[in-house]
Length: 341
Image 1 (spheres, helix red, strand yellow):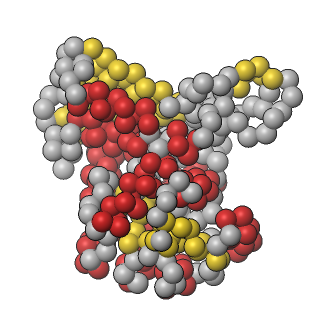
Image 2 (spheres, one colour):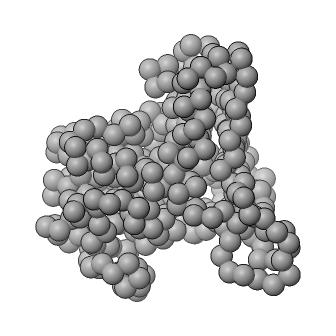
């Protein structure tokens, strides 16, 4: 059984802990949080050892893989500590705040010779995986364009709203998902060459200086185009949609639309991430960690770690995603197409 240590105790850490229950050959054994009370509560809930520091968790001999589920600004320090202890590392998205910082993270992991995985969940979502199979099988001919949307009413934790510390707003937080899904569908050898982006703080001026709505156009070397939409201003739950257009058809996926919906006058508890309302029309998503690809992602990572092979998403992908998003932020300022270095 492969021992896993989890850095973080927020929403994404809970999602990863739940996802690991679906992995037969791995077990969550340790946790760390910057808030000792939350760390203790997390440890009690998941029946694991709570460590007082990141260093203590990474030094734990029972931990073989460290999962980083911490705010963006702590990723670099966490990777440095885990790599120093020669632990395999899985880091949540985005890998970093900028390409330069992401490259530092990759360099540290490579210099230490540690196995690494970039936890981009969207490409592991079951309906996105099925759409990918259909595209690769030639079902819609040559893939020409992709439009992808990720939206909700805003982050659940205060640190997301601090754009200066976090590295960006909705584009960095949510666009990193759709940028990577575009690379996934169009091929990672088919590089993004130019981008055009727009972003604005439209609804949350009291909370952030970062963009709460953004749109980006990604031109690929092969001539294809991806449209990426990221939003923190959409109330009523998650929006997770892909529209793939080919020379012989189209495919649509929507991870936020499940088989259950209804009108309720009395609250029933948690229904879906970012629901915004407890009564009225509700659209719960059963088994969110599976529907959003967290379980499948963790199985993929653990299987590859156990086999000593490279997963489909690594820190190298995280660097490329940050590179593309950096170019998008340059375009927001210049209001022109910007080359992707």
